[in-house]
Length: 205
Image 1 (cartoon, one colour):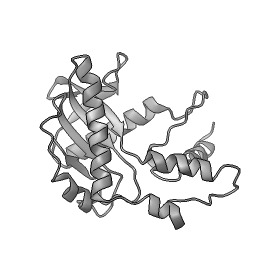
Image 2 (image 1 turned 135 degrees about the horizontal axis):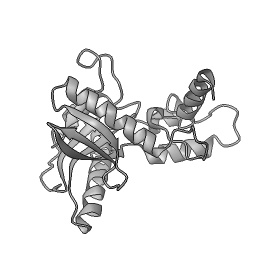
Image 3 (image 1 turned 90 degrees about the vertical axis):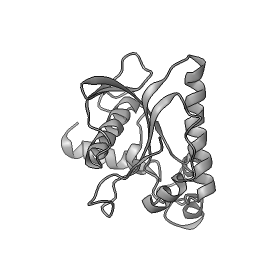
Image 4 (image 1 turned 120 degrees about the vertical axis):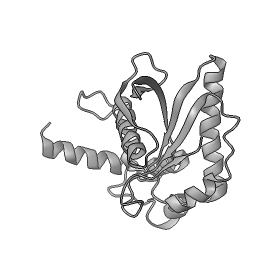
């Protein structure tokens, strides 16, 4: 596939979700497709760039872990670090977008208008509920195997999440029970208004 066609493919892949298209995954079989491993490595690199820019950590030598879990391995201060990733995304919206727009030439249900816009919004209650569910699910999974990792990176491309609101909402989150991860970070989509333009990154733990 040439460069122009690949760019067109990426745009279609992002649009196929209807929301949070930055982290869309192609579950097909073509060798050039953007699969889950590609997205996880991209998210890890984006997180590392944001962590460096915001002076949280300098993470280098990121690469997929062939013995997953965790998803990614890297280095901090010359020592190996383990990084698990998970996406924060409104799965109910994605499912409804796919269902409502089946057999349609253009979307009738969208995050940008009508009921789709309403369904794609967040408030503190819905945000906190989903965040806790993600983290507690990961902790429960790895507690059974007596496993723990250095970082849990939660990444999101949710269109209608705003950094200032997320900062306020996270202040009410108590990470103390989540012992399977030494650090828990929340990474948002690129925002040109955020600290000289970068991906907002919040430290939960």
